[in-house]
Structures are given as structure tokens and as C-alpha cells.
Image 1 (spheres, rainbow, N blue to C red):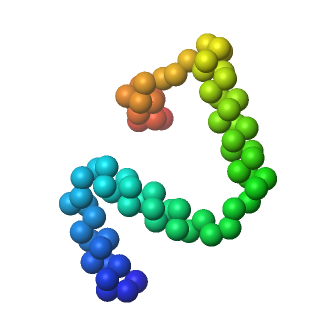
Image 2: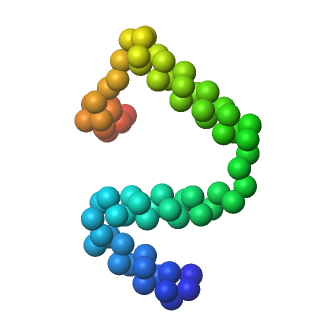
Length: 74
């Protein structure tokens, strides 16, 4: 890893959560140089299906605290 990258990586924990999330998102987006249209379509269909299920009341959400509790119990 180049020195500049190592310095940036070392400094990131001091950033506010929102800034770290934005930085992480930007870095991930920079890796996606090629878009697989089939994958994009599959993700879009899945998201639309899940939103429809939520809107119809066919599924219920679980609070994040409950998800963490369940994972910790494993």
C-alpha cells in the first residue's frame, strides 16, 4: 500500500460516521468499472419485490437491535 493510502486509512477512524460511510461508498463505487446489466436487473427486481411485500404487509420488519441480539445468540 502506498504511503498516502496508508495515511488516509489511518486517519479515517477519526471521521464522523456519516463521512466514513460516504468515503466507503465512494471507494466501492470506484471499483465498479463494468456494470453487468443482468445483475443490475436482478437487483432491481429483488428490491421492487421486497418493497411490494412490505407495502402489502406480507412481511414484517425486525428492528436492528433484535437482529443483533439474535446474531449474538448464535
